[in-house]
Length: 241
Image 1: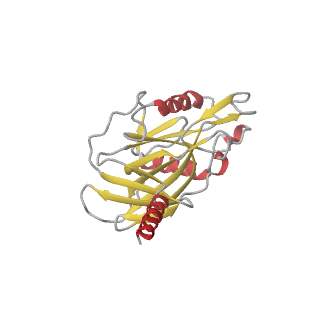
Image 2: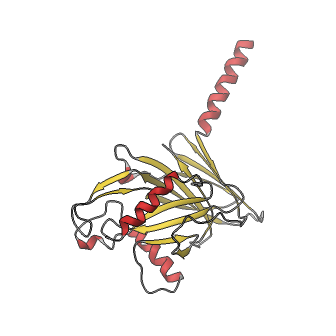
Image 3: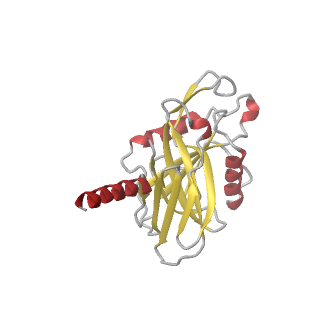
């Protein structure tokens, strides 16, 4: 009987560890979502991407801010097709532009919590309390997300989950950056958006696509928005490997 109990206990612990291989949790204070819109076809973008790469060594990474880089496709016309670019990311930038009542988009362009951001330093820690966002990753890339808003009101939100690539090195052979070897970090490789009701949602972590390169690192970023809105309320993220 004792052996059976010990065995059962061991199996329960193993099952528990499989149930949540990785967890990421924000604090109640808002974690910034810092977005960079960039392209390998834009000669002005490498300095902005180099600045973003330095955030890998910032102690406040993931805890106070979550950086992500969307590669747009409108520079591809210059002769180099950015492997990380997507019409979906371009449409996202245009949506921001429309909300800001702007007539154009540009790269490099930064967005902080849904607003155009032109500062040169790391954003200061937020003092706004927005609620706790928690992610649990299980076998098979299943993501279980829970959001407890500060107000306690369990209305419908939208959950956004992105797979990120880092240490991605590309030799650009044409366009404005032709001949340069570029390093990319926090690149959005794929993104899923699902409605969240009752404060919980289970989704599949989207596949990595072009980011599955030798030596590359992977991370996850997730954020909550009000239903039908683009501005983030809370964000969380962390390294997968």
